[in-house]
Length: 375
Ligand SMILES: CC1=C(CCC(=O)O)c2cc3nc(cc4[nH]c(cc5[nH]c(cc1n2)c(C)c5CCC(=O)O)c(CCC(=O)O)c4C)C(CCC(=O)O)=C3C
Ligand SMILES: [Fe+2]
Image (cartoon, rainbow, N blue to C red; front, top):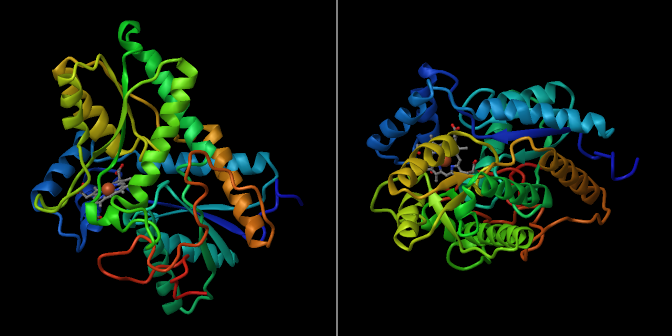
């Protein structure tokens, strides 16, 4: 076997995701799972619950993950990569613990995980490692033999992600009226997080204010903006902005908010805007509500022509990128020195999160990192 097909030492891939409700009765229990012990104000919960009810209580995220699972299985089969793919969530069924138990019962011993988040931060990286540790603790209590679990490096700068996103921006520009297309600016949008969480994102030796979370997003946004400029022959203004803020109002979160940014752009006379959902890998509720419903309404009220570009979803180039990352990591674990693809300026991320990476406010055990209590 060569790198193109050899998954060893891994014998399973686990897709880790957030989970979402699948009907009106799921909404409240789902929100309780998400916000347990996190100090989210009740009004914010009611407001977010209403977003889900606008879509009959169904988040599209589970459907997207089923599609990604199918796309990965088909791609692996087509390329002779013999690696079973599983799926488990943090906040809704199928839960990570149940899936990891199934993986063990199926006889797998060495599991690689892929989170549906491309960046470093507590919410997007360490919290998934905590989910794995909690799952392993439960399996240990049940007397099962624990598998070894690893997590793929952050992939925001992998060509499978960035090139697909850049193509999405070109398609979105084509959807704007021709008269405003060349003047259109880019608003890269990602999930806001508390500034304290941003500052401590990534390894403790850090990136300064905003941490790895902001640095990685800026690097990705700049690469996409440059790629789009090269392909269209038009250099555009761009900015990184934030959405989906929750938490108490007195706690600082990353700003500006996308809706405020649209008002600012309008005030400055921008002829049009493409909103690029750079922080997300599928069109889940944060995209469908916060961008496609709320932000597009604000733009319409302002009379500012606006479109939202695509997420990577199950685009074949993204799926191929995941296969490349899996085979790269497998080769590394075998002691080889594979090519590690990365665009932008920051280089490929670490394979093993160092001690203190994306530090939590409340320390909890986290697997698949240098500070894992598990082998
Ligand atoms: C960085 C980040 C990502 C991207 C990385 C990743 O994808 O993992 C993300 C994704 C998502 N967030 C999602 C939903 C929610 N996030 C919430 C709350 C929070 N998110 C946070 C951060 C992030 N969140 C934070 C710091 C909080 C505050 C509470 C806490 O410290 O945990 C709440 C509670 C209500 C509210 O306050 O909004 C909900 C319902 C869904 C599902 C969408 C669907 O159903 O389709 C997805 C993919
Ligand atoms: Fe969230």
